Length: 102
Image 1 (cartoon, rainbow, N blue to C red):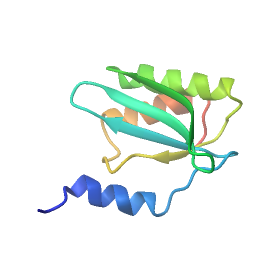
Image 2: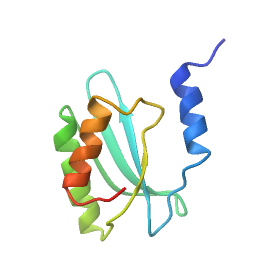
Image 3: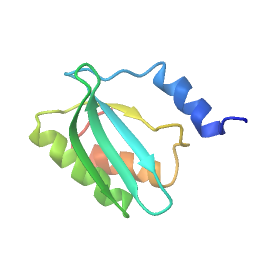
Image 4: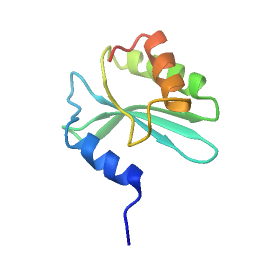
């Protein structure tokens, strides 16, 4: 059985991206109905901040606010194999407006 193209892109992206305690990884997952976002410290394997919802702008702003409360200012953006447009782009721009830099 062939792998979906998104899974191939995801593996290629994850080979290059690593989140640390200083600069964690901002992960995005998109289902048919919701969009999920997490800030993950890969050294500990722990989620620092998370948010989900229908509106990507609200999810991006909320995850940025929660990351700022955890004293995180910069992250590495992991788009999860999705193309950078539409909901993924809207979430990223809202997170930037919320104060995260990446």
